[in-house]
Image (cartoon, rainbow, N blue to C red; front, side):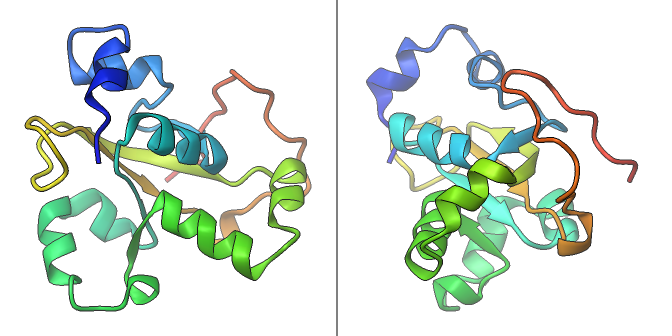
Length: 153
């Protein structure tokens, strides 16, 4: 649930400006751990998609309604906090692995009209998880604060 005071304290007058201050710009990569901290600190729902078409071409609210009866861990979309909790509970070395190989996801959409998550407008973010064959486990980890180029689509 949105933490209105924390959201209001962010610099910027528009949701896009506030998201940009948090480093959440459409088309850029974001460390999944940072997304978890943002979700926790600001109460912003951040959704991770596992399917490119759903992330890019479908309305978030429609996707959430469509999969509402499907168990959480079987959906093609999950809240970042749920994903992080699941991975930490099922892989005790997850935190160390993330230190060595940060899991970078791509910010797909930011919005401010998600119903049912607090006062209106309610900000949200959708991101796309990389496919296993896209993970680069041999390159150096990105340096904090640097935008990494996206791979060609």
